[in-house]
Length: 184
Image (tube, rainbow, N blue to C red):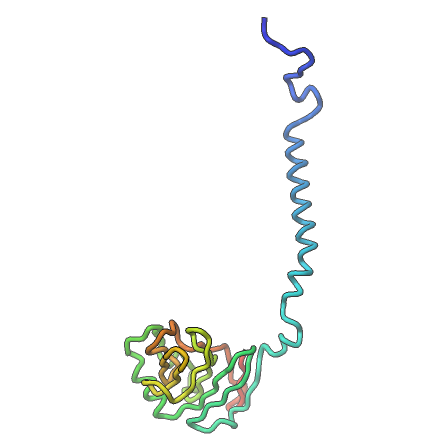
């Protein structure tokens, strides 16, 4: 004689409970809960986006007639300094001469400015090591020098010596005319 428990129903379908149906209900409830949490969290996540007035500052236009050959202007863009340099022929020649040098972050001078506009070099003015602001005219390569930790950049803004891992960044920009540039 088989051991059976009186009143036990070995067939789960006989009692009207389908285990597959129960799994579906649990999955559906979990999906609804995740959706509800997402709907509640979205306003908090969305408020972290920049405000409209900040987005308006995402681009800046600059009149290039204010910068003489051999001079540099620093303007603020997206909370960072932006170097707009009108390079001399000598600075351009030095940069091109160093195109084949042993560079930590290899880039030619031509890759760092717009075609036909070699005299205009536009760079984000923060050292790629720790974000200090380098000064022009110091260092061993005639370009920028970061006095905080000793990074040396050439006249094309390429890292040549020191702890900085990459070249000074070139932002997205376009010339609106021969005398006006738009950054961002």
